[in-house]
Each structure stands twice: as structure tokens, then as C-alpha cells.
Amino acid sequence: MKKNMNVEDNVKKTLNVLDTINTIKAPPFFKDKTMQRLFAEKDVIASVSIWNWFSPQLQLATLVCVVLVNVYAVKQINNSEYDASISSFASDYGISTEQEYSLFNL
Image (cartoon, rainbow, N blue to C red):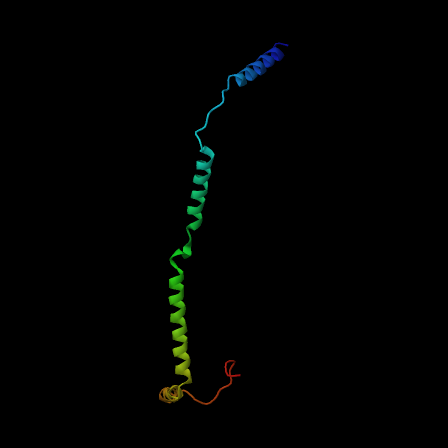
């Protein structure tokens, strides 16, 4: 029985502690300031990326360079001198210029 009374005393002491709790007055706009800080930190973390250096201006410049290189390559392939230089290269190195069957020539 002594244990039960001891438990009851502990419960009473615990409930009495709740009576001593006072309300705390928060500074004005505390919630708004806290929310702004929380979301500002998330924005900073989210903006960090591997591809940040690849800006739209750099993407456009890269695209223009690739297109120019491709146009130049197509002009060189369609050039008749290209075929002549390939056949002279083949004859210089003893490579047969006859048409061979391969997967690429089908």
C-alpha cells in the first residue's frame, strides 16, 4: 500500500507542476520571421546544382558551334574534291577503292 500512496503523491506533484507554468509572450511577427528563415534556407539548398555553370547563353553558343561544324562537314562531304582526295589517299596507301559490301554500304 505504501507504493500506491507514493505513486499518488508523484501524480499530485506532477499535476501541481502544471499549475506553475506561465504563458510566454512571443515577439510580434515571430511566426512570419521563422517561416521566412526556414523557406530561405530551402531555396538556397535547392538552387545548388551541378549544371549551374551551363547557363542559357552558353547553351546557345554551344548549339551554334555544333550547327556550324555540322554544316561545314556536310559541305566537305558533298564536295567533289573530297571523293578525289579519298581515292588518292586509298591509292597511296594501297587500300582498295572497290566497293565492298559492309553494313554501312547497304
